[in-house]
Image (cartoon, rainbow, N blue to C red; front, side, top):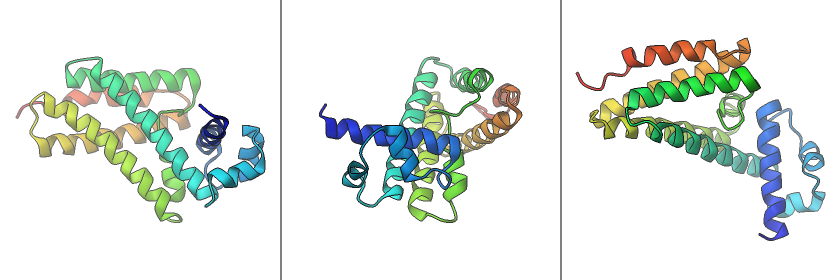
Length: 191
């Protein structure tokens, strides 16, 4: 990998981490530059449209990582209900031990940009939809009708995101564990 690619990736990783911790509006380009250790000119070389372009790539990177983690967690257990419950419990454990959302949620960016930046709002929407689809596809493989599976995927995605936010606020994963316990009564494999 050449240094231009490394520099670009370093910017994206740094921006992603800072946006997660501080949010989009509170993170400045100078801070991203300082944290990344790259020269200022290289930022505009890689991201000629500035902060929005960098944020878009950071959101997409975070979304890819979150989706990959979700897919791995769901694929590790054949039964979809058990897989979903285990995934949510793992999120609770991460919050208990690390009190962070790294590679777990883009909710802060979504909430911060949904009214002010259509490009970033749309990127967040696409990520949420892709996560819902991961849940749905797992359920479809277990025989759940497609429309019902996507409805369940949306519900699971929404309660998980809300659970992450509240758990972080409370500084423990107990709410996520409560959500995990409710998944079998919410998601029905056959009716």
